[in-house]
Amino acid sequence: MTMYNVTLSNSLFPAQNDAESCEITVGGLLRDVAAARPDAEALVEVRQDGSEGRRWSYAELLVGAERLARALSTRFAPGERVVVWSPNSPEWVLMEYACALSGLVLVTANPAFQARELAYVLEQSGAVALFLVEEFRGNPMGRIGAEAVTDIAAIREVTDMESDALFAQGTRPPALPVVAPHDAAMIQYTSGTTGFPKGAVLSHRGLVNNARFYAGRCGVTEATTWVNIMPMFHTSGCGMVTLGCLQAGCRMVLVSLFDPDVVLDQLEASSADIILGVPTMVVALLDTQEGRPRDLAALKLVSCGGSMVAPELVRRVQNLMGAGFSTLYGQTEHCPVITQHHLSDSIDDICSTAGQPVAQTEVSIRSVGDNRAVPVGEIGEICARGPCVMLEYNDNPKATSETVDAEGWLHTGDLGRMDARGYVTVTGRVKEMIIRGGENHFPAEIENCLLEHPDVSEVAVVGLPDLRWGEVIGAFIRGTGPLDKAALHAHCRANMSPQKTPNVWVQVEDFPLTGSGKIQKFVLRDRFVAGEFTEL
Image 1 (cartoon, rainbow, N blue to C red):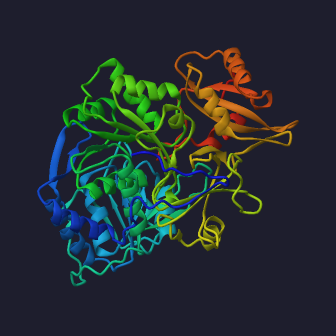
Image 2 (image 1 turned 180 degrees about the vertical axis):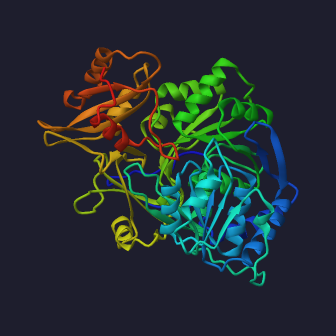
Image 3 (image 1 turned 45 degrees about the vertical axis):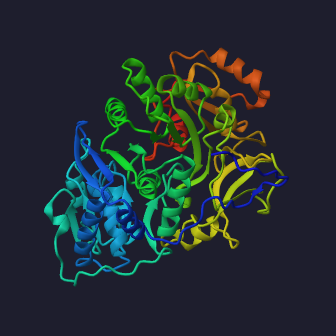
């Protein structure tokens, strides 16, 4: 698992062919793996109380998925959209495979949604059914679901996923259609780090290939056990991990509710090899492991996405878990992984870059003005092209054309730079770029500097409105203890040019997060403007 050997002068990384791009559907892949490894354990349920529940072999998983697919085919026509609104559960996995087999488009929804948010997803996606559970973490989902569908005439069915009604027979003849790799498999709504969510329509081909490229670089084999703590409503949970495990025909231990003690117990009990989490999850696991160590001798890799990581986090993973560490970068519109580290990458590359592009994927850093590849080392917009690019934004041709250009480049909206080896460093969002007194500042550069300070656990750098400068730089920091503003200021001045040093310093206990664990910077800005924070 070594890096691709390239030497670039322009920021245009050619697609690499070390893994082939397969023309197959999610359902077709399940059938192939069930035929090849029928008796291999596929899925283990971990209930919300931490106890182990049901188990499926690959043969059993296929039988259950086909049974549900046939039931769905009697109630819905191929191509119709159905919303799955549920926490992680085996039924979620069965719905993913059953929708794929029956040609339905699965629309994902965050179980923390309230009625207005759920109604938006139902209406915008053109859904005809809602599959839910009655309650999760105090959220009365049954009641909210009933309220959300009241004025949506297209909804024909609201079904409790934990009831027998899931397998109810309708009036259509049971028949599974021919599904093509380029057909839509899912609609996933963008995380909303900047507000208005758009529905990314993802193909079978994109999801299957992206998961294989990702899992392959993680070193996953049929002997792997993967504890899945990522939400299934996000491409990380239902795509990267679920379909990544399917690629290898290995075992997935599905955790219903993230609790660090439960997860660590499962890592130990199942002799797990790998886990994927966002930095906040990894920090929680490390803090809990420090308090009550488990035997994690089998753990080979902690995979991490969502933001850049502090060197101290990598060292803690190595020391407390005895595992390797790999970061990745992606977005929902790319199913989602775009770049990822190799297992042999150095700690410097892991902390300062997001790795090289995944297989079969061109990545380019392009000027925002004229859409040309910039020289190596210059900052521009990160763009990707290949089999994993979304089909479109649902019912939004204007946004689609603004995001995927005529040459097929997906414009991520993220700023970054590429070195001569093709390693990408994310430097911020195009829309999050801070313009202070006419000078451009890139939040990720300042965040990475602050993450090197031992008192900083997590940080978000945000542009704050200012009458004199237009914007000033605000640093919102979660610390390992009380923060010393003078020490942080001195650290920045010692490691960056003076104008990049934050003007406003705020210590926070936690961050407003999207459902996929990304920090909502626009919420921090709005709360600061509303006077909800006290400066250091």
